[in-house]
Length: 476
Image 1 (cartoon, rainbow, N blue to C red):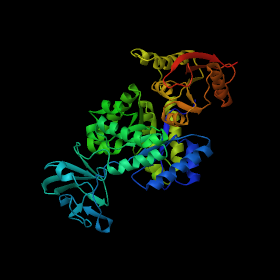
Image 2: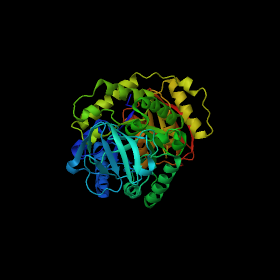
Image 3: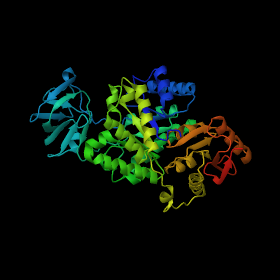
Image 4: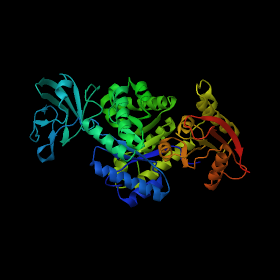
């Protein structure tokens, strides 16, 4: 059985050479993440071209996810690059400061901070490693006392415990970056720090307008990393095509202890709402410098797989780590082992399901039939990829093959759990299409004589949302 859980890997200095990138893709990368917090527009365009070329050479289509930077809620720069804060000392965050910071004060990239905080608030810097308590706000200066000290270097992030920072999800830079991402037609656009469905709706409108010259509409991923996003989760999901459980900033705002339960809740809700979900942050962190992961990291990846995540994500591990290829190989092996341990109880999950659409009903019927007949594979002839997506929302140890004539749909399906996307010609005749689909899977070694398979398609052929037929075939 092929690996069901997909792997998202971040491009960076460690993985931008043609040779390393090809080895990573061959090792199991399904989606390449491009972090727009770093690099110029031309850098991203060049890297996207490289990804397409290398994927083609490796014989595998991968999706590209453009990850927007979002608001820069950070301190400024210091004399000498950093300072050391001691517990109990006073420290000022000064929105008007233009010179380099020192041990007494530092400037702010985020100028609205003095209006977002009040005495008694807790500020967490550098991913929560430093903790400051707000004593008073004087004009544009936030006076604090250091509770937990340590090294504070240039441009480290600021979070407010419990949330409440008013920074908009989409900045002027993001709006320009969306245009860049649309110029190379990324399949997925990840939006940082959304607080509401409105943030995602605005991002979709911007992306659709920017993609219009290429008739391209990307899928949108909402990165859940703000406290305010939790109560709005259902609305955000409805306005998005998927979410990322961005455990870094989220943990700083809600507390580390709250994250595991939130992760399970988010994965479950996303699957129930037919959305994709990516689990991210520190999954294989130790492999940035070590050739093997910790036992805890192995368990973390395996638990995300058992929870039903579509994909697990690597950040610095592949962007800047010493072992980018080995990390991908290890993550792929962990995913396969976890999937082999899954318990499948399809009947129970179907009991309360109701379907209002013919194509959704056909997709669910294919799952049910394949499960009970012990089919070797499920073949979904799909233009948009929606049929394969619906099938993939249910755990079933029967591989799903999304056969499409659309290259954009093939690449988008690269993120769907348990879906193998295959490009095939567009046929107007149904029987000819079914014969070709079977032959294609025989050629790939998926089907052999005597195997049964379930296949879905629509008639007339070639129209998105038109799936209305389910057939069980046997290879002669």
